[in-house]
Length: 296
Figure 1 (cartoon, rainbow, N blue to C red):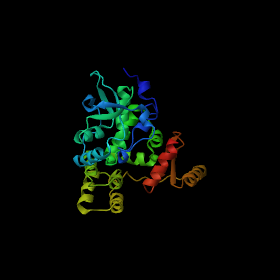
Figure 2 (figure 1 turned 30 degrees about the vertical axis):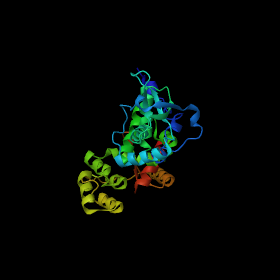
Figure 3 (figure 1 turned 90 degrees about the horizontal axis):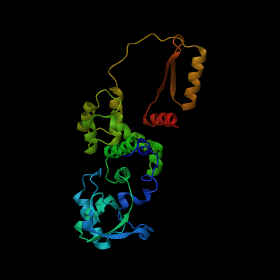
Figure 4 (figure 1 turned 180 degrees about the vertical axis):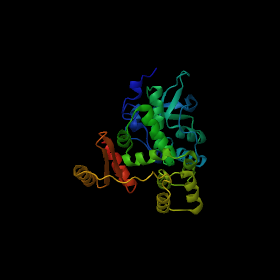
């Protein structure tokens, strides 16, 4: 049984040492210099897909296109496999199921593979990594992949950004989309809303209603941001007469505001010895900067 310590090991073998074996799909069948030293040839009928593979849908058009390339050039990039857990002499595909499917259409009888000794957790981890590097991935699928890597394997946004050659803000912005209701996420997956449209709706009271309005009117991202600002929160708190702040509090507010280039308000209760700090941001870039400061 996998311990919680190993499940949250940070950058383990699946994310670091094996990153070189998982190429983005935009260059999926490109040759890899030096990989031939470890390559073996295996009959195609001895290869089996990973039942835990996160990717369930394979475009017929894309498979046909890759099959044409394979007929002309062969499979230039080996599949990553491990010994099959229940079938002797057979192998389970860790990375490269799309190539395996296209090779059957070609048709080929043997495929080049690199055999790795991997645990179930590592196989799932690599499958998710391969999945988030797909060129045709929609923002919601990509965000879900990042969340899996963080929640199941304990990776941070910084670690993922470094290993996957993404910016931390890119990962943070996509994961923020997962706060939206399912019907809005479905519109993003269908391509009716862009990630920019969806981000503008995150802080609104009823993103589902606004999302439908955005789609029906064909609003731009900028127009959606203006719409969201006008309908952000209908639940306004009761207004209280503002208390006069002492000079030290005002000076601290000014210092913090100058340091982060955003408005800062300190609400401190001398009686209770507690309070809150409120930072006002004007756009998503400023929110990203706040997240960067707090996580650094």
